[in-house]
Length: 246
Image 1: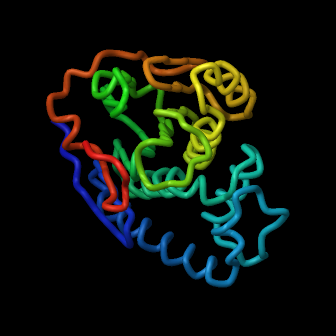
Image 2 (image 1 turned 135 degrees about the horizontal axis):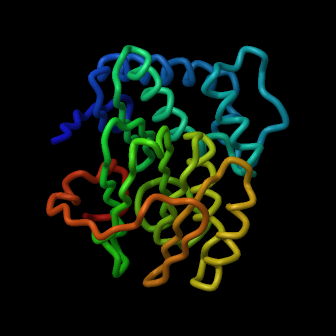
Image 3 (image 1 turned 90 degrees about the horizontal axis):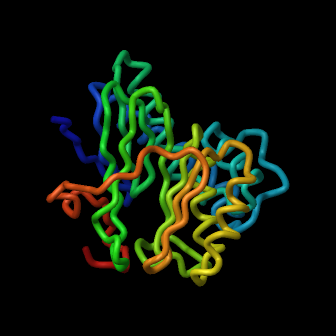
């Protein structure tokens, strides 16, 4: 049975499974401190809701990765922060010699698996609620799985979408695309146009969109199965600033 360990740093909350837990934690801490120093000298990076024209020459690698995803998708760079951190933390764990690394950062994950994983999806406020899961095989990884919601969490959203989940090789790209997908869906009839737009973004392999009792699927996604985990709700990473109850 897989055993996750929790780690929180400066209001960011993680669940990590890897023999390289300490390496992942060190990477997260270093990235956060480095990014904060950059933002102190580049306030527009944190405030922008659209791609910036350029970055300062001294921008750290995390900021550059977020900027690239931002420009590709058409959202602000901070829309890619959680996915970027998850991927880089998982990479640090793998580089330490671990065969498997799973890093979850507030609903945004990066996976490198050594055996099959059933990943539960929490869709509170919808008829799907805690019944959905994806069966992910090792040969489908590395993989980023990033989700966004207009009704759960404290992140800014311009839509009214119950949940979007995006799959990609890039954590930054998946995170940014999940934000855009969520912004695009305000009513059920927006699902198909949003699927079409997101799937045109280079590097996106697949996505799921939920709006009330409607579901839209597109691209190459892991097998969708019924969740049988009785403890799914206890595994949802929820920030104290979040506006929903589990």
